[in-house]
Image 1 (cartoon, rainbow, N blue to C red):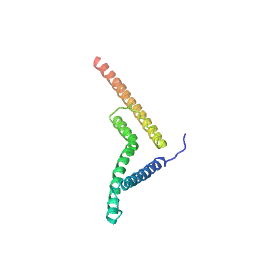
Image 2: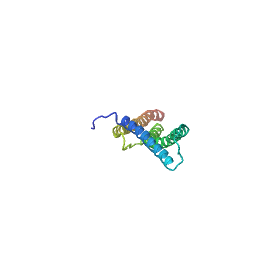
Image 3: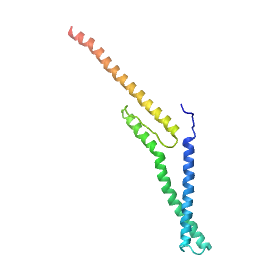
Image 4: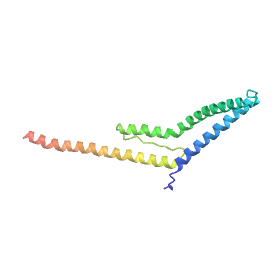
Length: 151
């Protein structure tokens, strides 16, 4: 059994947010630098500094939103898979199993996968026992009634 490392997911999320912020600022500064080199931003007076700051903020917001959406989809995909499997399980499909092997935070997802699959297996066993019990009980109950009717 692997050593417990409960901070893997938290660490990955923190690194992802930091990466998005750094990458956003690098791209935004590079765009402003290119605008200055092409002569679009010539004079760095107070008015142009304000325009540059507003432009940098807008560019950073757009790039950050796009990066967050792309990376967020990768992070949330295992949870979407789990949600779909849980809905199938709730609908009575006890054969559903999941495999959340990912490149990130594998310990948490391994534990979640193992627990979910064990739960589905146990619920399937309980359902089978319940249906067997009902079948046996109805058979055992009908047999004396048929015998009494025969007399």
